[in-house]
Length: 319
Image 1 (spheres, rainbow, N blue to C red):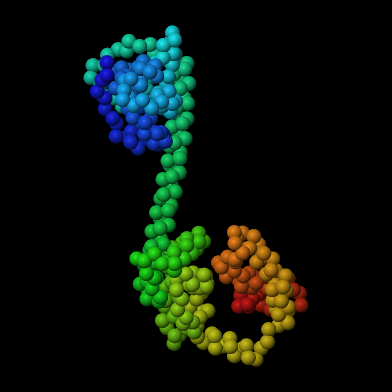
Image 2: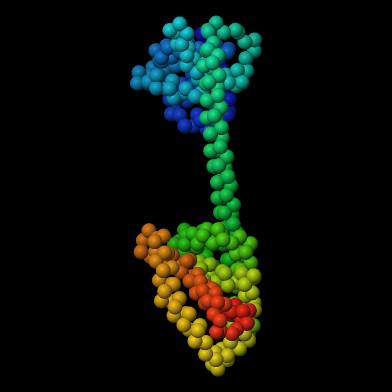
């Protein structure tokens, strides 16, 4: 005899049920109506078809039974087919429940079924936790990107239109995702502040060029980080002093030699490695921008090892 049953709101968000076909979800709900108060029911496919889908000729009940078999235990007693719905009494509120007249599933079969179901449930929960972590990470990253974009526009350097999906906007967001792997949003905002202050004070600093944000990320971010002393490096009097020294002093021959050595031997290898990573024959701009710094590090290291070159090692930082 069919009975009225409740549908738990958790049914609609269950990870495992969400993998089923719509027919299987409806079939599973229909089983509740024809199960007794202990969650047992007669389970011959033809009987279930007649009870749950009396007007649907194309429904394959045996296939649906297989699909819901992680939630329903199908078993045979004396060649009669039965089903037992796991957690039935947990989700159904039954006043004065009647004792089942149907035989229970064998204890060993039931225990194996419950153990297997627990493992599957843990698997879905783990996937769910991972998805939630990934979503939180993406939300945090998107918030950081939006904060940086808003901050950049507040400096009135070369504003970016945040409402229109332009190529420049997409390019900028893409580059921000790359740079946020190496630097925090606070560091990037700090570098933007330093850059904005320097270019707005031409009487104190020699650098006045206005970049778009994506250009700043590729060409200026590292130089304008506070730890790299931008206020000292871009001082106007320092450039004038450097240019006067340049007029009277030539580069030591060893440095010229090391620059040639890097450009002829090391740089082609690095570019070749960069190209290997690319799907197309084009250079990764972010990595190429770091080549200048790589060259400087190479020269510094070689000079430290060079016995004939006398130089205060602190001066190598200026190379």
